[in-house]
Amino acid sequence: MPQRARERVLARVKAGELDVELAAVGLFGDLSIEVLLFGMAIISVVSVTVSQNLGEGNEAAAGNEVRQGLWLATVLSIPGTAICFFLPEIISFTGQDAKVLRLGAEYTRALAWCFLPSMWFIVFRGYVSALARPASVMVITVSAVFLNAALTYACVFGAGPIPAMGVTGSGIATTIVCWIMFIALAVHVLRVADMA
Image 1: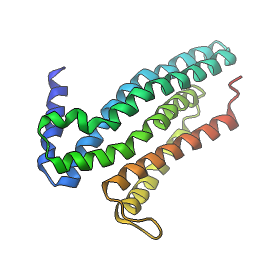
Image 2: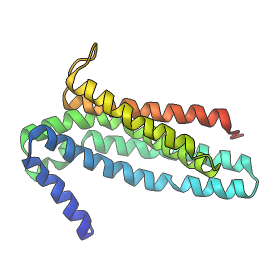
Image 3: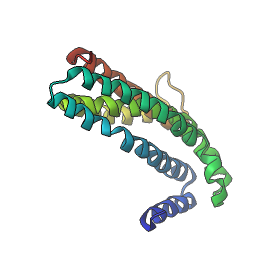
């Protein structure tokens, strides 16, 4: 493991000495993102292959690359989701406080279900970017930031009919927003692109 990566992991593990809820969400959220980024790095090649096929005028091959990217994203999501789901057990050897581990488990078990839509979103983002139409991705992403903030607040502290769920609510809110982002971009792709 490179030194910088080792330092970041140790810093996150040490974060467990802070406020318990903040520590759990910070530590487990950061580690979950690392797992997601690994999968995204692999999936991001779809935009390159789609761009190449579109540049050659081969739209059918570009559509095929997107479909293969969706399959690969689905396959990579299985171990990614499992790692996120069992992250508390994986890092329990670091000597974290039992409450941090419990809260981290609540958070990551809700957050783990955002892995698949996030990976699918990356595939469609690559396709839309290859079509030189990145504005839709920007609008969806910026909107998602505000939606995530509002939904996280509602799910963590409770609002209207939504009960206060604490750290679990934060994971649920993020997962819901990831699914909304994917669905919004999928609808956009189906409306503007022929992947035949």
